[in-house]
Image (cartoon, rainbow, N blue to C red):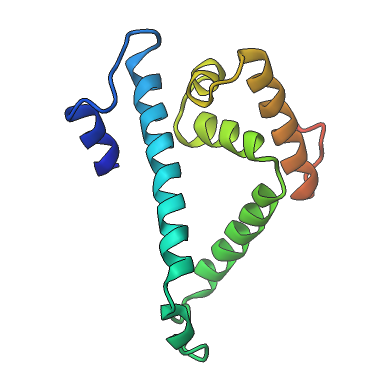
Length: 139
């Protein structure tokens, strides 16, 4: 987030007024996050530090039953989301977690509103199937 804001402040990302400022801002954040992921992956590929990690170290501290159930639900959701197309995941994330409209999400991703609606509806239907919910369940 910090890097995205710096891009705006130092003028590397400029708001041209073609869309809402919020749409522009999320677009800058999305592109910056993609750049960071690519850089991190490259650094990891070049680093040998993963060889020295002790595979017998516990990855998760001891937790209560409520946390375990919540973690299982989160794991199921994450696994289901991983089976969606990248576009479906992106549209669903922007609409559900960033509280954007489908039109704003389409502007951020750079696709038509109609295409975003199709990805949104198909993504929701696929999640219902993957999570075992009735596909006729209304939102």
